[in-house]
Length: 188
Length: 393
Image (cartoon, rainbow over all chains, first blue to last red; front, side):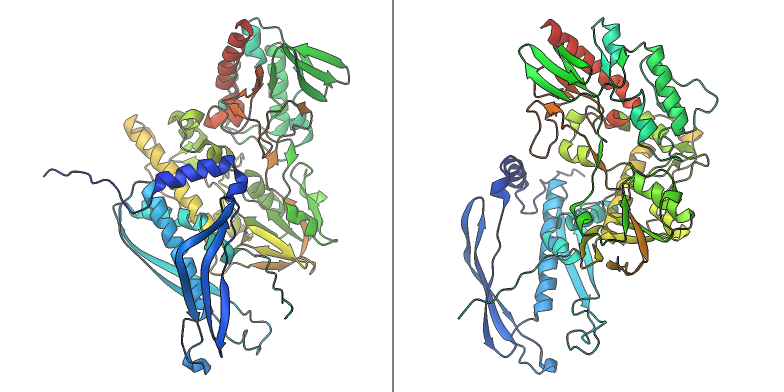
């Protein structure tokens, strides 16, 4: 039975990424990006965030359209559940970041992906956010990510792709390492 | 390099800031042994002929080895002569020392990759009352206060110091970032024997997918010892050393550790297994299987369910921090514009971006073995050939 090897295509333009890596290594200023979001309170715990513009490659940039993220709390929190909770949006951000990384790393290693699904769970003791117990932190106790991946690769190769994706992930870094956060209030 | 220049009848002088084998005499801890077996320190015209080829040299033995090589190869060494500046002049270089200046057409920088300990910026936030030291200052455990020690960095130095300090009765917490796991012995032979025989050490710099990354890799988690033990994270955990993630920051007297420990260990296990795969493949191809123990894999690195993410440095639990966070070269005396924005010499396999300037002994300079004593021979031969060609050109 003759088998023709199909070119690997995960829809990632690795050549462009590698070119960018080379170009930005030589021009470190262009590598400095600023990511932005806006948020407007709607009512109760419901708010709407939008992203559109960002800064990078030495200039202001725009997404092709603006993207909207509605956030709220569920009804068992006496809210109206008009959107995901902010912590679920964090999980979604981590999942998307790791998954994009998996696609890029697999493409670079010439491994065809057929299906990639991630299931995420962040455990949280809400005694923290409710101020019941000051020894309990507000955020997650831990996050568990589990991947189901169907690809033309050995289990070890797949584990290596997932490990490399974590190593290069922005959101993974943001969650696993401390970040200084400055919150200011502008005058009315 | 001196040996290679002599054999080409190229007039030269070797300037040594202190005594021969200076860094081995003044910058190493007492129990350190070379990480490579005795047989592997093959210098041009000089190899090991003692009774223990598989042993690991102690520091006094290493010093004696280098001192006797200087005699054997009749290197024109001028000791106690620190170079205070090297600058380009018409037709070559001007080299300044306290004992006078030299004019030369070429300069070989063989001052090494490990002159200054890298201490992370967070060191500035260590609360008073916690003593800090670098491996360059460390000699023996008695120098360290009784009580807990935080060792930052888990490559060859960090793991060895963690083991020694913990066994001395000082409970060690080890902050683990990117590291490279390797067993001391695999299939009945030293890992360095396998890597040498399988050609891993001869991997060339101009055949790497990403040479910048290859040059930035940390040292293998290896130790030289009489019992040939592997000092990996599982051994340290079994001794009672507590593993935490990379030291990510110090805030209000609290050390903050990254939540990435599990992935760092996974990356290291996968990387080790790829090395063992390469060795097994080579063993089969080259007919070594019958003479070696069967292939096997080591237990994955054990990481506790929820490693601590913080530690109160003001509680008295940690009395000392050891920065086993690597070294960098000192080029403060090099007044030739050949450094990149990160302070590294721009070179192509040791040929610097300034005519007549060469560098040796840097990570993956020309080959994977370039930082080893055993790597000097091939690099020196190649660079001496280039240098001779330059002089006659």
